[in-house]
Image (cartoon, rainbow, N blue to C red; front, side):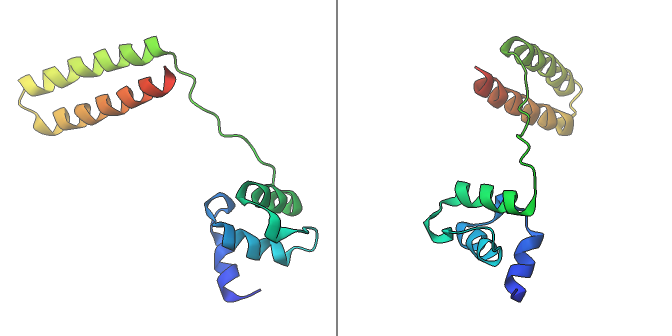
Length: 108
């Protein structure tokens, strides 16, 4: 293996480019037809050859109602921080509200 591919192995397989995955796959004798594969196929083949189990990422299971309730609670906290003239905490709460709104759009 070249020095470059040794560095690539330190990088997670999911983060590798197709070019890097092909280099890794070419070093594994179990995989054939490397140049005809796309990234998803390469990733699956390399993981299978190395014996890495592909565990699916668990998505957050939040309902729209719970997220909206959280937004309301954080808005109350932000209002209280603004009344106390705590600008730092108000900014933190504003960003938290923004993240929750994005989450609510994904859930809906």
